[in-house]
Image 1 (cartoon, rainbow over the protein chains, first blue to last red):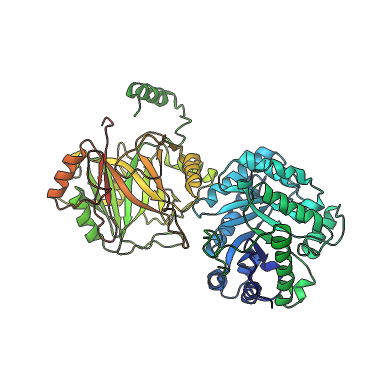
Image 2: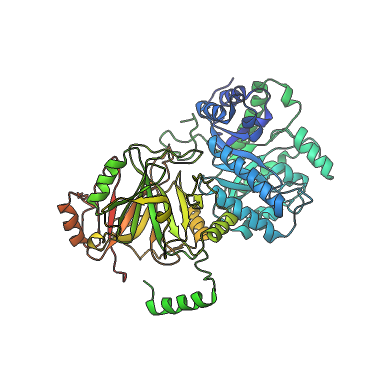
Length: 302
Length: 303
């Protein structure tokens, strides 16, 4: 493998893109030159030996944890359903903390039992943010393109602004933005320091209009940036985020049935090509100077 | 601090008509006790006694002692708690809990849980009080106590040590001034929001400083009776995020230098380095037992 020093520390893979046990996933991601990994609750909950053993593996890998996902259908519920979801949220926060993640990803609710009242959605997210404070966790709220009330990132932004909690921010997912045909001009309304995460993926067809198509595309047919048909838009998305001052992490949010039956190293190589394309050709990042101190991230690049 | 006349009239209105003060949703009325956890309770007890605290009572079922001087209660807990995010007592004492006096403990507890606090499952023995608690910073807890007027929580769970004065006066007029909390990098806004949302704490202007260690941000309790000082790590290359913890308590005194002189005669040493040394604004005791320290702060508030 080409190991020439290329700085793509801001880009990370998602363990969910890979087949195999957690240890093999982490090793493949690290060996491909990535410095960070997004973890899913399923990676951790199903790990033999439990959460603590999984947490030890993650720490030993040397990879920084981009975030932990995903809390679904959380906001807008009432009564017993609300109490139930608070319990689930607390369990997710506890796992998130245990594996050393400072970020929990929450996707907009798809539940027909949830209200669409934005103030109620905001109130629930604010409560979640308060629950996350003692654990040192930031909440990332992300629009699912098949969400009930919140389907596009400007909708999520509105809720995050209403909730107004310092540890609550927005996540942007390129696949949902393309599926929902969100206007990239709307990126200009965002405050870059309230964008806590960007997840990148593409797909192989121009449109995903129905809810079923969108779910199918996101869960089975998403590909790495540069592999799909929206490469130009994806490059524009990343460039515009950079232009408004976003300096946070980019995580490849790729769920693909083909990748799930290939050796992790093969899939990681595709991710690596994608990261190099984005960092070199799109963002034109260079290697940091030898004495340049990076306060965030503990990648092996220096 | 506050205009005593307006406070008194507001209190009269509240008492008569049960009108809730929106700026003090829990009806916070100061600190009921500070709890330390340690496996060396006698060693900590000696340190507390040099500071003027007296052992008053012991817990009926656990290795827990109550120390007191004036209006300040300190609990020394050597009893290992079970469950996640609890303080396992170590040799080095840590501040394991703060108990807040509130109007109605059950209502206060419901209010903060609804706003996003973590409940601490209580483990009470037969005939013991169930004091509601939530998780605070790190492994610490925040208790809510509403029995502090006619009778106290100690009447139920504690047995008085025979022959001791249960109400020893405070040395040098000491009273609770505040608590210093160490926080992580970029965590200032998170904690300000947390204490504001759940308890009604408000930040004081940066120009308003107390003591001789003016770092970080200061929050005032909604009843204006005590302060929280939040201190971030020194800027620099932070590779391992430092622990967030309740670092020390602050004791208010009307005359710092007189208090320092008195405490020195009792064997208390004070930090005297280039920047930090006792003066009229405050003083810091030298760390004992691996880090237990007390900050004296000039406190001009009326008693």
